[in-house]
Length: 310
Image (cartoon, rainbow, N blue to C red):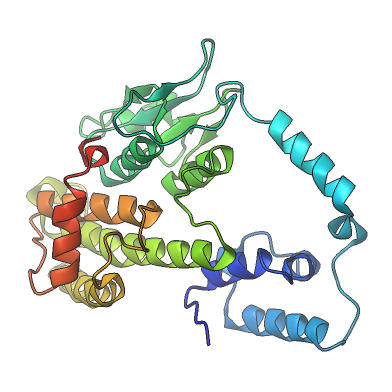
């Protein structure tokens, strides 16, 4: 039996299997645009509909447009290739000992970044592993530059990183930026190559993000003197975050086991997120407990990769 414990990862897995077209129709019929918003009740309905299709139940809910023949799928693939931004004219090949591939002259794409913040670090590690070079512009969050009117036009929430696209629009979440770039450059794969691999990578990345990085951030906000004037600090909130961090690191330690990378035999976006989380934990004075031997071993090893210096 295969278990995928994260709801969003589960739906992404279903969408890419042989029942994917039917699932897509179900989601459309239920008016659900974001799989991450699925709760247990919705997943239950989804499961019933999928099983109905497997056992000759009700007609498929997918509209006719989802059931095109090979020629239609080929046309859509060609269209997607034509829609790529001008600065990505061909797939890039990972070559860590060679110079990074630079975008074509005339590109507008760039990244708003700040060295020292964990989410920009996650993106920089990903770009280094892929061999993609996109110009960066620093936005100083310590001095509040990210709260200036000019920057808030790019990201009303003031967060980093931000990817400015060829048309001048912006993507403002690190994971969304990574998945966008992964769609443009699927090789080397940092999200897996099969539906189940992609689900597993997303599952582990969410544990690294929500269970480790988020917990470290909560401890930092509630204990560090730098944050005292910005947040109403709470010792109880910090203690709760420490307990949550330990629980998630215990799970990660077991899942990593003796593997070289978080999700298997090659680096993935889960490695990028966990590296950023553990580096931030050092800055936040939340040291990694050496009792988590597999995570400690992984951290020491991954820090030796050139991408860790990005």
